[in-house]
Image 1 (tube, chains in turn orange, blue):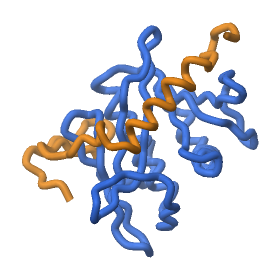
Image 2: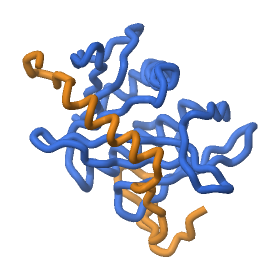
Image 3: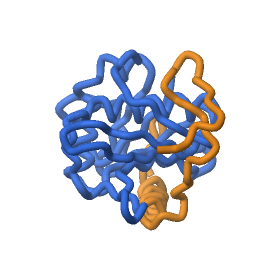
Length: 53
Length: 146
């Protein structure tokens, strides 16, 4: 579990604590693939309120 | 939202982690928001379990820790924290498999009365987004805080 070095409770939404050591998984293969898949999917998706591509 | 949820931790408001507690033990979960498009700005929400031995993330394994709704409420809470810092943009989410996406949909349906207070939710079918409706199977979701 992350060591809490600097805890800030988000007002209004609670339960989110800011710490100094949450590891980014941006380069994790799982997330890299998810992001690539999302980019491909969104290039084709018609967003709410837009006309079909 | 006033649903029961886990405390989540963040450093940069883009990566979050929290721990699911249940019959299968204490399982580390991670949520990551990544900008995938400009004009309009859309972020991808990716979510999975962190392997305690390798640190590798996956959402292939079904944890079945009997806390699915609490986990979803926690993820929804990370969306609030994220939007507080990065703005109310569309957030795209899709499971790694159709079955996983279906699980997300079932949780959204169960928590709809709470979720719909704070979020617009659209479901995607054949690359077209529609307002979320219960009992419709979607291929992915676009969420935006109201």
